[in-house]
Amino acid sequence: MSLPPLVEPASELSVDEVRRYSRHLIIPDVAMDGQKRLKNARVLCVGAGGLGSPALMYLAAAGVGTIGIAEFDTVDESNLQRQIIHGQSDIGRPKAESAAASIREINPHVNVVIHNTVLDNDNVFGIFEQYDLIVDGTDNFATRYMVNDAAVLLGKPYVWGSIYRFDGQASVFWADHGPCYRCLYPEPPPPGMVPSCAEGGVLGVLCASIGSIQTTEAIKLLTGIGDPLVGSLMVYDALEMTYRKIKVRKDPNCAVCGPNATVKELIDYEDFCGSVTDEAAEAVVGSTITARELAEWIKEGRDIDLIDVREPAEYEIVRIPGSRLIPKGDIVSGAALSELPTERQAVFYCKAGVRSAEALAAAKAAGLKNAVHVQGGVLGWINQVDPSLPAY
Image 1 (cartoon, rainbow, N blue to C red):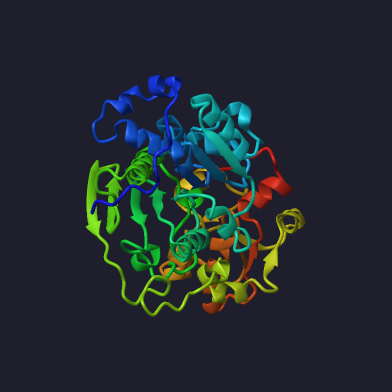
Image 2: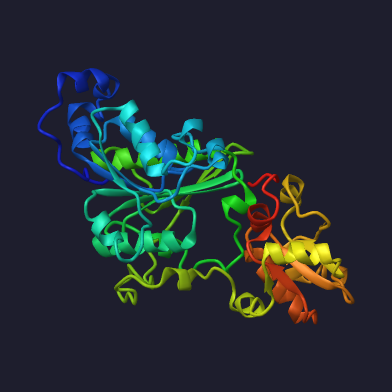
């Protein structure tokens, strides 16, 4: 459905701005009025990573007058495969500062506001209130639900995107005119059920496809042109090169935007989404060792069976010496329980410790009471024991 423009137009464009945006100005649907609205717009991008990179760059190029960047992380070498707003010389630099520098290089007419902080319940309202529109480039469920709930409670529209391997999704959530994120996903998936991009990977260029859709939707909302993805979910399959648009209806029972909403203020989103299941949290108590302790066990010649519970592709990248691979899914489903040791002590590890905790819970339920898992996983081993190994 078409919607009225989100912002009023600025009073004028300078001569330099007319020259810069000439290809917009000659589009009848945009023209001077639309470009002036972009100049007057204030857009916040939550995250300056895979989705935030193309979104920020094209928002700047399009002439959005004020762009906020909410990002607390620093640039890592593994980011550069997809986070194109950063470069080699930015490694170790705060992402918000790196992104701001790139934006200023793209368009000096843009006012960049840096929020170099973790977005949380204490600051999200104060930050969101400064902007007309939110572009959500987050990569974890706790922050997604917080962004949604804050936007609904403030009456703000936001453009959402999600990526994983070769698949992407995008939509516009605006409770005043259609569904919110909770209408589509009322509850987060069980902890460990959906791998993150850090665990499962993402095709770098997929970020450009979904990020550009997000930016397109932002421009449409700001200027009031076209039919934005309010009430629609765009699903992209890069391998098949297909786009599907799925209708999303407002949920009358939605906990945050429904007529009988129960969520009237921000909640504990970490607890709501859960980092690990209750069973895993219980299993790791008294059954967790550090990477350094594992190194000592190996040095002492302790009779252990070191089991890597990641996926085969991850195992090929880097592994702890002497380990063997049994993916977590096979352990949790019961398919690989017969492969677990009955006389030796099982030691599970994954990338960072979440999946190994889930595997540990399943193993203990199957009778392996002395099994343990490695806190921090293979990354802990690299940081504490062998920094010569590649991290990912």
